[in-house]
Length: 178
Image (tube, helix red, strand yellow):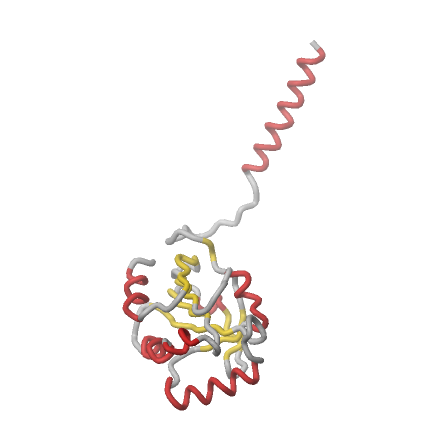
């Protein structure tokens, strides 16, 4: 009889723990529109030293291209991406470079190089953010360049694609993303 009572107490204790765990303090949030993980919130500087926060893009779809100055595939797509960034789409275009990470130049050297490139050929539609040391590249699992990230208006990372994506592919992909 004593053993049965002991098991009853143990089972009751386990049930209580499970019940409490099911009633945790989960924050109430809006229902995700897309499948995937929410993008980590970041604040990065642009080429002029201004802070840009991911939170400022809340409610907007965002195309992010991670690239490097030494990457020929990346450079061959810069003009095309600049054209896309200058168009009126239902998504924002951002590019991110990681100074002092995976062979990229320092922030100062990259900024000087890019501003020269920009005046020669690309125009000025691109937003270039600097992920110093690749902190967010690592969090996002960026393995190579270029890599495209498609983020829904709910902040969910819907798709990650290595390699170059043409403007048509980018536009058509966002037609399927909320």
